[in-house]
Amino acid sequence: MEKVPMTAGGLTPLEEELKQLKTKDRRDVIKAISEAREHGDLSENAEYHAAKERQGFIEGRIQELEDVISRADVIDVSKLSGSTVKFGATVTVVDEDTDEETTYQIVGPYEADLAKKLISVQSPIARALIGKTVGDTVEVKAPGGIKSYEVLKVKFK
Image (tube, rainbow, N blue to C red; front, side):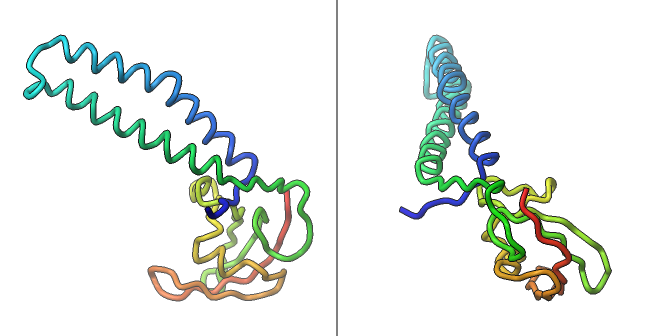
C-alpha cells in the first residue's frame, strides 16, 4: 500500500467528512430508506431507489476516506526548511511569457484546490518544480502548450 503524502491541514477535513458520513449521513439515509419502504411497492418507488443509491454513494465514500486516512503520511510543513522545492513548499513563480506571478503550495492529491492555490504534488507543474531552487527555470507541458516558469521564491509555512 502506497503512502499518501498530506499536510496536517489536509487530513483534518477528510477526518471531519468521514465523521459526518458515519454519524449523520448514514443514519439519515437509513431513515429515508425505511420511510420509502412504507410507501409500498419497491419496484416503482423512486424515493426508495434514490435513497438506496445515496446509501451506496455514502458507503463507497466512507471506504475511500478510511483507506486514504489509513495510508496518510502526514508531513508537518512547519518543520521543513531550505531553498529547494519539495512537498509542502510555498513557491512563487513567474510565467516567462506574461510576467504574471503566481504562488502555489505543493500539497497532497486529496487536499489540492486550485482556487486556493494548493496544487497536488502529482500535478505537472509541481512535478516540474520539485528539486528546483530560486532562479531555476522549468518547462511545463500544459493543455495550451509548453509554459515556462522561473522560480522566484521558496518558503515553508
